[in-house]
Amino acid sequence: MAIQHTAVVPGTVHLVDVSGAAPAGAKMRDGIQLVPRPSDDPEDPLNWSRGRKMLALAMVVVYTFGTGLPMTLQYSILADITADTGISTATLVEGTGYAFLLLGFGCLFWQPIALTYGRRGVYLLSTLATVPLMVWTAYSKSGGEWFAHRIIIGFFCAPIEALPEVSIPDVFFAHERGAMMGVYVFSLFGSNFLAPLIGGWFNEAYGWKWTMYFGAIFAAVAFIIMFFFMEETMYFRQGLEGLEDEQDEIAAAATTTDAGEKGEKSSSSSQTVSESPAAIYVKPTLAQKLAWFRKMDGRPTYQHMLKTMYMPFIYLYQFPIVLWAGFIYGINLCWYQVLNGTASPVLANAPYNWSSGLVGTIYTGPIVGAAIGCYWAGSIADKFTLWLARRNNGVREPEHRLWPLLVTAVLGAVGLIMWGVGAQHHAHWAVLAVGLGILTASVVAGGSVALSYNIDCYKDISGDTTTAVILVRNLMGFAIAYGITPWYTNMGLQNCFIMAGFLALGCTLTFLFMTWKGKDLRRASAERYWKYAAESSSAH
Image 1 (cartoon, rainbow, N blue to C red):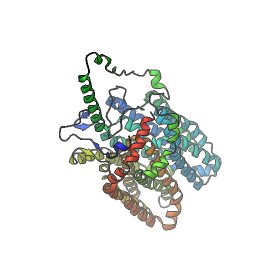
Image 2 (image 1 turned 135 degrees about the horizontal axis):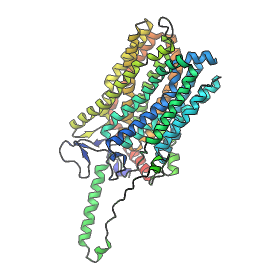
Image 3 (image 1 turned 90 degrees about the vertical axis):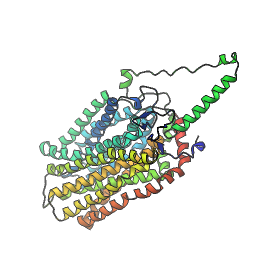
Image 4 (image 1 turned 45 degrees about the vertical axis):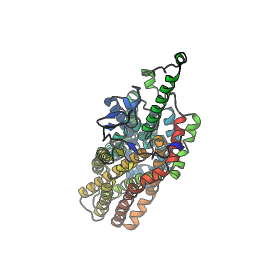
């Protein structure tokens, strides 16, 4: 199968019917071809009602907040934890770095399980495990203990990094993915920005230990909501994205051949020919819907599941686009880490002298910025992609989605310079808040575009390539967690953030190379991609 499809470029799909001559088997909606093509099964998540789809998206958001917010509550209260426990702030920050590291590598364990036995059970396990781990955090007495629960919570919360990127394409079509992926990325970063705001004021009212207990309660409530309302979205469909038209031609040719053969046969021999019975679709019972895992026909073999635990490393080597998407997502995570690593030291000291509650309040700017970035990289990018597809005879190239990065590249540089130069010269806090908001809009949009681009390019192996992207992202985040403090301490806030601004600009503008050579890279990887996609499909 891999050899005969090498002429088909992965990710290039006919998305818009501009001539009124859509392929015979295509399913259309408002002139847009539905990719991937939904089956006739009413329980196929692509066939769900709009309300049911939005409920599935809402459950992804509940999960993201239910795990993302508790594990980041400590960002604005590190000084209070240090004062009470004697654990140095440097050790606390280092523990956060270890958590980020396990958030990446934990995906190697959880993602194959979710792709084989279902998404729902992994989401529930991850959220439930967060509850006792947040309680344990409140009892921390040493650096070793802090490292231990940060590492374990990073492992159990790892699905937050890669599983939503699989669940969303389970339910939504190619022309909808950008907007829905933007909602997820907003939830991911938004939960991390909301947590310090809540944590700061909660700490002032009840102390840091009860702040951790609040995280446990929050995760428990999220678990209860998900248990009753989260549906399984795993569905094994026939065919590969991008080959629908080719498969239609093969089916049409086979039908014509069969018709010719039937015409030549005698009436007696034709009695041996019988039509295939119509497929019977069974609606799952309530007990099946509430089950944590579901054993579906066509699921990958156990051997294939084990293989997918190391395949992300191979994909990083064999698919340069995956590596680049991880780099873009990673560089944006770095600026997020820079924000968290400098907000408290800058605002808690002279001339601002803010309390932990006020330090948390500065994250209001990033929350607003995250919403703007989500809309820019989501709904606006989807509409722009459709516009470019219409100008390209209805064909969508994944690189069409990259152009919004032209704006985020500039915004990232402006936000970083506003923050660093403003802090160095003791600017009004509103200047710093606006700078952080601009920076966050860039960070969220950049991460969302990188994830969507990876999925658009290699949809049928995106469960594994997304893990590869997250590995690169979190390794970069782990590195910057160690480097940011000596960086701005030695260079000074102004010089550090001017350099960071131009680094952000230069790194993001590498998308121009991908708009030029991205399709060539996809074409060069076609044989490998269709081979892996066919193996993944045949393992079902």
